[in-house]
Every structure is written in C-alpha cells, then in structure tokens.
Amino acid sequence: MATVPTQIRIDENLKKQATEIFQSLGLDMSSAINVFLRQAVLRGGLPFNVELPNYKKEVIEAMNEAKKISRDENIKAYTDVRQMFEDILNAED
Image 1 (tube, helix red, strand yellow):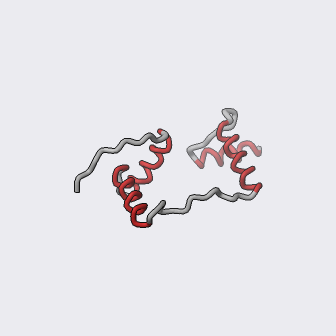
Image 2 (tube, rainbow, N blue to C red; image 1 turned 120 degrees about the vertical axis):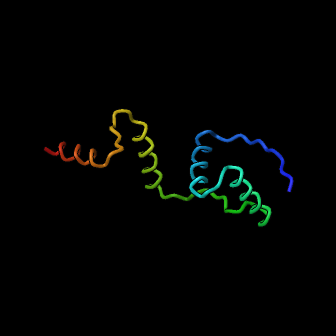
Image 3 (cartoon, helix red, strand yellow; image 1 turned 30 degrees about the horizontal axis):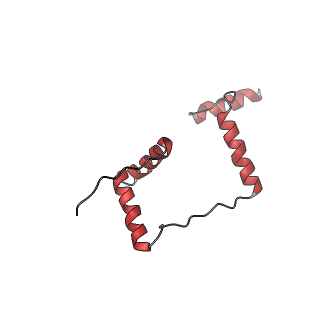
C-alpha cells in the first residue's frame, strides 16, 4: 500500500498530550491518525459523538475555580504528598 505524506497543524500542547497517550498505547502519531481515519471511513463519519458537554452550574464553577487556582502564583504547589501533609499539619500548630 502506497502512503503519502500529510501535513497538519496542531496546537503544541495538544500534540504533546496526545503523543503521550498514544505512546502508552504503543502507537506513534502516524499510526493513531491512521486508526482514526480508518474508523471514520468504516463508519462513514466521525468515529465518536461530537457534542457540547452539558455540565451543571456547580461543575462549571468548580472548573473555573480550579483554573484560577492553578494560575495563582501565590498558592504553593506540591509534587510530594508527604511534604503537603507535613505543611498542613505544621499549619495547624
């Protein structure tokens, strides 16, 4: 089967996230795109539903708050759970 080069433009962060997922599945980007295209042809359209999520107001507010917190430079971030709990316990004293 002959293949042809195809060029697409993708957001850098989206590409990085997708590449990590595909690698965990044992796929490279080209193979994953081929799977998608084969499924689209097989199904005669997109191989998944495309719809707007219908989140409750409280969920949207929580997501917006989480985004705001993640951008706040005054809030300490942790990569070590033990350190986080140590700081919490020390703050209670």
